[in-house]
Amino acid sequence: MPTKRHKPEEVVSKLRQVDVLVSQGKSVADAVRAIGVTQVTYYRWKQEYGGLKVDQVKRMKELEQENTRLRRAVSDLTLDKLILKEAAKGNL
Image (cartoon, rainbow, N blue to C red):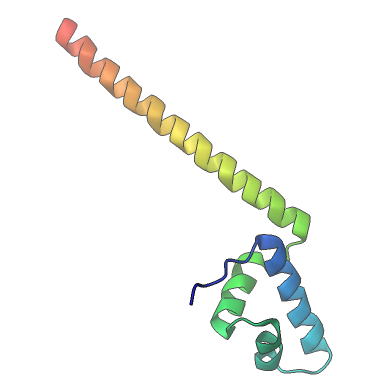
């Protein structure tokens, strides 16, 4: 059975659902079971997304993508620089 990948917005809403259910008197285990994930997943999500709002999560994911793109660009430029240094050594 394939596992479902939750979008960050869904994760934040499910974390809020658990908070509501716990505040209504349910145990954390029952609340986590009600949203359909394991306790391990819940605590991992809470560590990563706890306290964030939906717009903050979207912005965080955008920044992570931009960071990845910039890291790739820097590594490509560094490689180009090293290749040019090697070529310059042979010419001199």
